Length: 186
Image: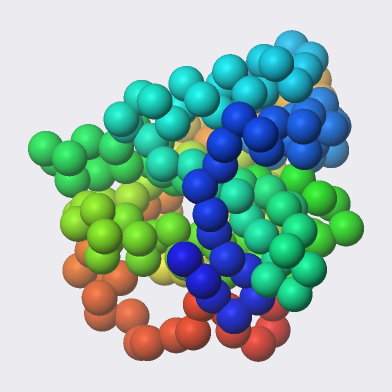
């Protein structure tokens, strides 16, 4: 899948080395639903391969087109073809690439894949209330807030809410046609 700035390609076990510093960086993982265990290359490779083999997930590397550089991942998990739904997760691991619109474009591309290729009806996600950048990205793509899991998450010695967001196929189809990325990046 190709957008204006990024392309998405399937993740493989060979990508594990790039992910190890990201998944062990507290600044990166503070917005992710990951455990506190330190991940090494072997554990990261095993996780990628397990997800790819599950039949209920698709994982993509986010690649900067201009440089062919892997900067993160986006994917769908808990894919339920019977009920035509899935959960979305996205991470820009390369901190120098934050705030450049790459996450918005990657999210749009994977949501389009969910509705047009997988023929899903619903894509949902959970995001911590303090992840304002993430919430803004998801709202720009068309996700809407459906609810709140009150004080469901502990971070930095404090309880935080988890915001549940989703987008339905009919909402996606009603949105004005937008390029995969737009000016005024996040």
